[in-house]
Image (cartoon, rainbow, N blue to C red; front, side, top):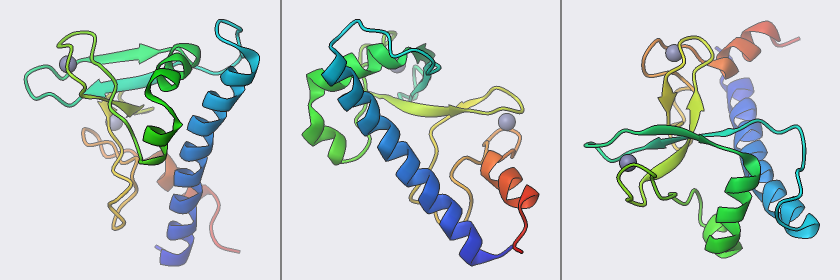
Length: 137
Ligand SMILES: [Zn+2]
Ligand SMILES: [Zn+2]
């Protein structure tokens, strides 16, 4: 594995995530609540409460609404937990849904020895697949 390439891909993913979050926030802020931005799919959440582990989806618009309540300062601090609808704790994080097996998990962007989107259940990583499909020229 080419470490340099791997690092670039991960940086791109992290930046992409931040831009997505910021984009949702600004986009809906400008256009006002309730105005459908259109084509974005749902955002997946996973409750990290050991006793709960609830998995759920939220539309981008609903999430933007929540972000507005929390405020942009909190977003800049990193991922802010969302209230879990099942246990009512502030313990639901944006999760990845594994394309291979459907497991929900919170990607570990701080771990730089492996891909952050590695599925803890089946080991599938979408980033890894992309890297493999586009080998270094
Ligand atoms: Zn919960
Ligand atoms: Zn999986």
